[in-house]
Image (cartoon, rainbow over all chains, first blue to last red; front, side):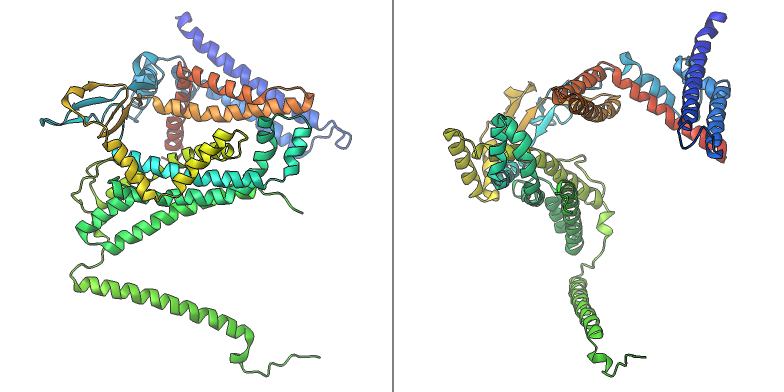
Length: 271
Length: 252
């Protein structure tokens, strides 16, 4: 009987000691703060109020440890079955926590799954199983690679012009300090070039977002393709166009506001 | 008293003219747009296709070849699939394009002749071909791979065929979101470690290797998380029911 209660008492003691320690430290610091030349150790009403509030909070916490809520917290921390199996009115919620905290039950967070080629229905054709592995469809691959290469080439021009726009004296000064070329690039040239690069870079991001609409040519179902299918079926051309315009402007404005935020952050502060 | 007396007529007042000009211009623009839309809606009514948003709610009866749902239940869901597919390319594309572009930009300024020439040649080639042609090219590349035949049935590690590229992927377990929170925390922790090391560097003037320490903290944190540490995040679950208990206790 006594040994069943011991861990609970230990936990309660730990909580009480921790709470009293923090309260003591807070109050001691408040009192110490007033011992300066201008305060002359006088506690204002504000200070006294703060000390009383801190003491009260700790008192409430200590008393709360022995109330039902504190007891159920102990049950939870000690892994008491009574707690997890009880009807809390929120079905399966606490059950879920126990399972999530139980390694044997839930396994590792991610498992590697390999792709599998299976028979498509009962036909003679084969397809990749959609449930395992990752399948990059033809349309996705073509759009993805095309858009990335195309944009990265333009970004490389932006980067090149940004690096070339940094004054030559900067890198010469760095070299004369004995920096290696890599360090020079990382510490001196790139931070300054970034400031020049950012606005045209944002432009390229917008181009990338808009160029994805070409996925329609390789049957990748992005919003233009889906919208076109929809209005071919329903005849609501204007409505679909409004949705397209709203979507693309939302994306563009979001991207440009992000870039603008960083642009403002990186700007040289001029007085 | 030098009381200013306005003796010109108000329609010759500059302030009035400025405001009036702006307002009239705006009215004309709005009227034009309204007329266009009105005309379009009238014409659609005449062809028995009245403008409505009702298609967003009704089942479209179309199949989308890929996305989080393949048989959308409503027009809105179909559009949402399209949006998600577009964002999928955009987000990963911005990431990879920045990375590749920075590498190529630096390579173009390289002192190494071969690197510089090769990158310049690549850049000039890709830049001068229309994007649509390139997309068709990459489609043709994939379509030139062998078809998925019956002999290929079964499990593979990486498999390329005319149906696409298949590769292994992480399958989220039951508690994967806990690890997600843990993983996000790791960035904040690596950043904090970096700041601490930089502060030490500035204080003592010795090389404290802030980057190395940040990467190390990131790796240690995530390895510890992978082998069970992430379950500490599960304690967050406790807060929500406790909050609900408090709410029901105080409100009803």
